[in-house]
Every structure is written in structure tokens, then in C-alpha cells.
Picture (cartoon, chains in turn yellow, brown, blue, cyan):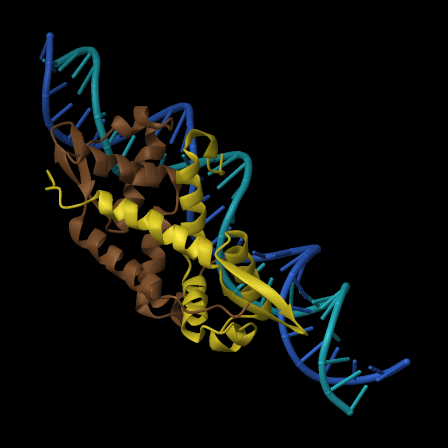
Length: 109
Length: 109
DNA sequence: ATTATTAATCGCAATATTACGATTAATAAT
DNA sequence: ATTATTAATCGTAATATTGCGATTAATAAT
């Protein structure tokens, strides 16, 4: 016990859960918002922007990258991060369809 | 350490993170989908629907309820769950604005 | 060559999550 | 009254996450 029983769910459910889990942390939400706001890619600016240690930021970036939501390219001594457009748009579509499926059905309770 | 440093984020970032974390589990995604699909409120059907123990389902329902995403009303010996419309629509709006802020900016990397 | 800067990784401690069996509390049926 | 049904809760074990200091690897600047 302790680990999620991924075998019993559909692939879509698992994928959506993984991506939502990646976003579901205030630090990572802040990172994504700043990435979008700045458009141009930033990197270690997050360390000063948020009040977290460099190791912690690096870990959060890694999780976002693992979920495929951002990408980073080495640029000399620093790393330039930005949104991964395809995964981002796919997630948007999947969430849209989830929310759309709850149109305006009248609740029973 | 081990706990999220909520103090350093905005209230919106924290709220969004809490609600996304509530959804970010395949079992809870399955529960929400089934709740929406059935429209009418189900309850312990989830135990047979998914392959999880009753205690586990009850815990997942509690988390969704704590996040304000669903509501449950006692109906005799069983409990009838359904989507909480206001929280659901608010979350939809917040996610929409997050995704909308990434319009079609051209990435730099 | 040496020194600074940047970011990844390792190792650790604290805390949170996932899952379940067992028990409990409450209503419904007999 | 007794028995079934339903769902919450407790306790526990396994695993995952969060956060950081310290170290490491790599390029840039001197």
C-alpha cells in the first residue's frame, strides 16, 4: 500500500492525474504563471522570485518537465525554460471536455 | 520540512493548488466522471465500479468534499453524492484564465 | 589555470498520501 | 429486538512529496 493502483484506471485518467498533480502545487503554479507572463524563458530567476532554495526550485522544474508541461534548453551556463506548447494545449482540451461534460444538468441533491 | 510553505504564495495560488490536488488522482477523476455521467447522485456504487475497498473510496470522497468539489446528502442508509456546482464552475473559470493567459505567444526555446 | 556562476543531483528529515482491514454508528428490514 | 446494509472513522503499513544543505558538473570570465 501507499502507491496508487494505476492498473485499474484508463490511460487517460492516469495521464490527466499525472499532469494535474504536476500543476497542483502553489510553487509550480507560480512558476507556470511567471513562465507565461514573461513569455521569454527565464531560469534561476525563480529562486529570487519565490522564496525557495535553489535545490527546491530545480526539483519543481524537474517535475514540470517530467510531466511534459515545460521544456528547458541549455544556454551557456544557465537553462532557459518555457511552456511546452503541445502538452499544454492537450491538457487544456482534456480539461475542457471534462468540464464541458458537466453542462447544466440539474443536480439531485 | 515536508510540508508546503503556503505562506509565501497568493491565496489564489493556494486555493487552485488545493482543488487541483483533489482532482489529481485517477480514482478521484473516475469518481468525478461517473458523478457527471450519472447526473443523478450515486454513492457506494463506486466501490464496485472501481476496484477499491470501501474505506479507500470513502476517503477519496472525503477529500473531494473537503476541497468543496462535491457534496453529499444522507438518504436513509446511503449517501447521495453530486458535483458542487459553484466550486466546479469557479474552478473551470480559474483554469480557463490560466490557459487563456498563454494565448499564442511564440516560445523562445 | 583559476575563479565565479548556474543548475542538477545526492542524502536526509519531516510530513503527506494511498490503501486496507477492522470497527463503529446509523438507518432499514425482518 | 435482532439482523442486514451502508458509509464513516481508526489504526497501521507502505510509499510519495516537500524542502534544504552540500556537493557536483559545466560553462563563462578573469
